Length: 285
Ligand SMILES: [Zn+2]
Image 1: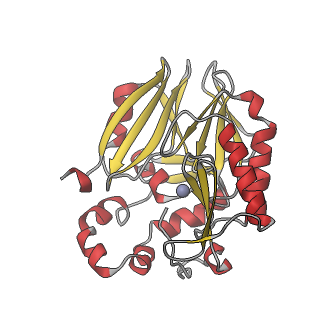
Image 2: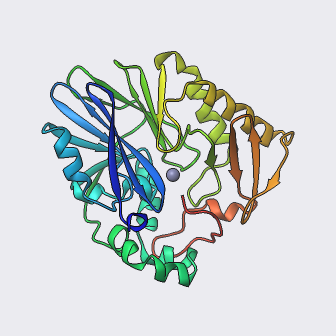
């Protein structure tokens, strides 16, 4: 049944850029394959619910580097199929936490865990023995005639980044600039002030891209979405935005097309020491 098994589809954005969509639990995750003259880069690896490596190898035989926009399980799930991935070091504890059985035992009710047990074993409780390399803000990856720059954008998670494809004028934004909404109520999210600074930094550089490709939902976006997140966050901070109760905990503030989910309890933001669990009653991703 496809609800419990990943299906992959691909769409060409241009001759050397492919969107790969993984669908699992009815929720699509977007990955992007960028080919240069010498190397290729895979931005994010989805949930790990299928053979992503074969999908990628059917698209390119070039040397491949894997780049993660952030450490959530629905963006790093198949890192282990590639042996090595780049990530912002600050998100590694988030990634390790989300790939622990303890974590899902704590946040999913037992009936749901039993229903999902096979797929959870396949995507989370499997061997994650890949190695990690770390990038920093401003680092670049030369793919051969195509340069990818790392833009740190903490908010949704403390180690979230966007990737600027300079030559093609694309921004790959992960869960930082997404149609519909951004969650700031997860373990490892930052406060709203930091998220606002990240969005302001992106706006200051927005003349460098024409299209934004996010980790989920509609694409391509343009920089109007960044403006919406800035206004929405300002309304959170000056308390002029209407706060609606969240589904489980915290509150939501909306502005035009987008919404931001906020926690009421700052403890959800803390990344717990290894081997311990956070206080969490929020959504998963
Ligand atoms: Zn995320």
